Amino acid sequence: MGLSGLLDKIAIWVQGIIEALGYVGLGLVMFIENIFPPIPSEAVLPMAGWLAFEKRGGFTLWGITLVGVLGSVAGAMVFYAAGHWFGEERVRYLLRRFGKWLLLSEADFDTALAWFNRYGELVIFFGRMVPIVRSLISVPAGLANMNMGRFTIYTAIGTALWSFLLALAGFILGQNWQLVMEWIGRYEKIVLVLGVVAVVVFVVKRLHGRRHQSQEAG
Image (cartoon, rainbow, N blue to C red; front, side):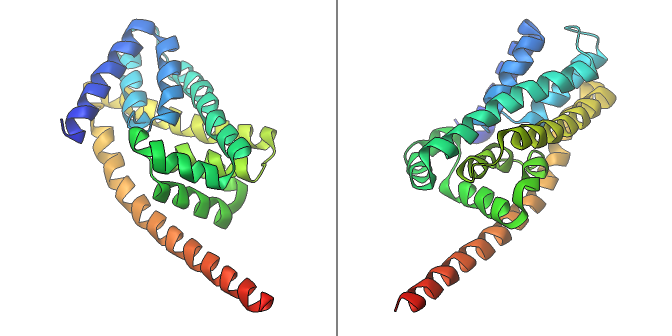
């Protein structure tokens, strides 16, 4: 089965969970989405917005936003804890060993780490709107022992904005909510280029720093 077939099956499974369990299902899916990126919020939230448009499951835009935030913050805490307790080397080992099952790689982690080191804590807010990065950006925050209160607030605000906009798009588009995926796909290409640039700059700076330390030691 190809990746597109897998994603189609995931989408069907997600829709079934949300329709069967309502807000509880949505919160569960948003929690898992933060740990298992192949479940894309850019499909989950517009779908929920469409259900709100159809007046199914008791969904409202504000309810979707609130539950999206609760599920996402809970999922983000898992990766924050991983960074805080495991440390960088062990996180890298786990990604090399098990990352393929989550469709996450060490390169994705380098991107998140580079963004955090370059832009500081504010990237926790903006990173919530960037595919893949929104999951792993919590790890550098844990590594840096970022204040838990600020981490939670930045994550919640960024997720609230992302959740509301995607749910609103699904509400407006109705049965054509899948179009959101196409639009986000174009946006992801731009983000990918920026991510590659950030990683290159990050690696060059690290190598330069190590060379400088070696020269001083010598």
